[in-house]
Each structure stands twice: as structure tokens, then as C-alpha cells.
Image (cartoon, rainbow, N blue to C red; front, side, top):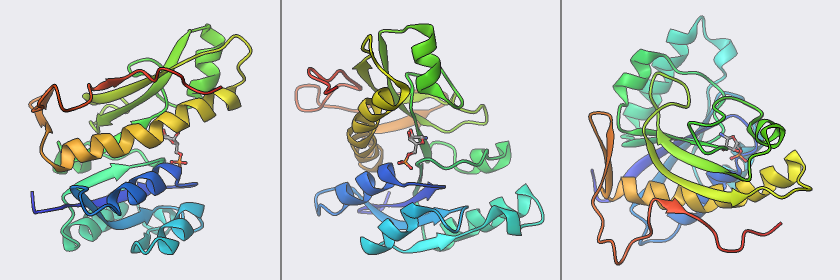
Length: 221
Ligand code: GRF
């Protein structure tokens, strides 16, 4: 990869993970720069945040394309003309075709609000509470054609409390997402992590780097 990997963040809404990535990349030591934030929803609140932080934004309304293929071609073109090395999905609510995913294999990542492979899909916090699990969390993984099933790079765990609501749990998990995603993008952009076939390879100096599993000692309620 180039000196600093060029990253496109894909969003559909609020953009709090996007903001965490942009703020991390404001440090000159960070190995990635955020070259573009692209949303498939033109009214996504995250776009205003990105613009206020000086990041170029692109509105690519998926409903204005004839079909999925045309939308993905436009997305691919946006990324390639801007010299994007890595695509980071952050609350991007479009399922991508196997062809698109293959074209960005090993260079497209996503953050998911559960400890995958548990609770792929939506409403993860409600489902975790309904099952009565005591540990929940979030996952950053490479994107594969199987939704929420790509190779796992890193996870952060939080406790589930007896009196939790889905909102409280979501809040606790989101705080970890905002640490986990910048850390993982750092690994990827600096070449410390990569995809080899279907396995994630780590090239760490163990005494100097955090482990791929973060268990916060005192996750706040
Ligand atoms: C996050 O919980 C993320 O894990 C999931 O969608 C949510 C997006 O939130 N993929 P935000 O837009 O980053 O605030």
C-alpha cells in the first residue's frame, strides 16, 4: 500500500463509527487517510459530520440507479478514480453482490454490533438480551459474499447486565466499536493484518501490540 492507505468509508445513517475513524486519521501518525465518505442515502446525518471534519463526501442514491449492478459499478468507479486502497463499511445498509465483494477481497471491512458468528443481521442487542447471554460485543471482519460471515479480524466484548435494555446495551457496545474500528483499520492500513486465502494473518510484535480480543476491564454501564 501507499504511504498512507486511502480509505473510503461507506455509510447509510448516523455515522458515529465514521466519525471515530475520521478523528483517528487526523493524527499524522495514523497509517490511513480518509479520502472519501460515501452514502447511499443522500440525507444521512453522517455526511454533514464528515463535511464539518473536512472530508470529501459523495451521495450515491441507490434508488436512482436502474439496478444493483449499476449502483455497484458507480460505487466501484468512485473508489477506483480516487485511488482507494481500503473500503470501510460503517453502518452501510446495502448488501453487496458477490462480484463486487470479490473485486475488493481482503480490502473491504465491516463493523458489526455482535460477537460474530452470533447474531448476524439486524436487532443484535434485542436478540442477545432475549437469549440471556452474559457477554456481548462487536466485531470487525473482512467482507465476504456471505453477509456478516467474513473472516474475523478483531472483537471487543462487554458484559450484559441483568437490568439491561437494548438501548443501554447498544450504548455500551457502541463505545467499544469506536475504539475497535480505528484500531483494526490501523492494523490493516499498516499491513499488520491481512487476509491470506480465508485466514486472517497478524504480523505483530506481541509485547508492543494489543491482542485481537479486547476485554475492557471496566465497561461503563
Ligand atoms: C453500528 O452499530 C455498526 O456496528 C452497525 O451499524 C451501526 C452504525 O452506527 N453496522 P453508526 O452509523 O456508525 O453510528
